[in-house]
Picture 1: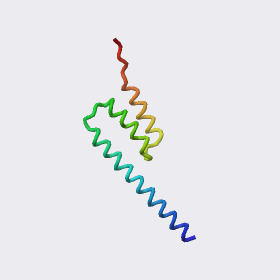
Picture 2: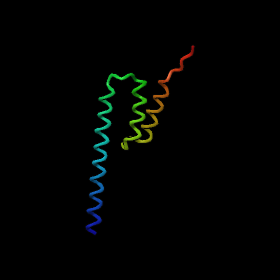
Picture 3: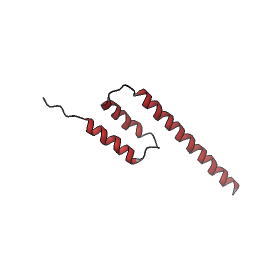
Picture 4: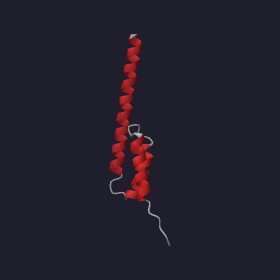
Length: 76
């Protein structure tokens, strides 16, 4: 019983570490994107959200929708 509790605690610690790393990577992306045009930023954020477990599916779909709205068709 004690071994199972210890294993569960190790798994909890591992998950917390993974979330902390993902958050740091996300913050690094935000800093790196400072000054980048919005259209390019949205494309990069879509790619970044695929690797960040803290984003919910709703947040991911909102970012995708925002990027689609920013694409303006050019007619010649």
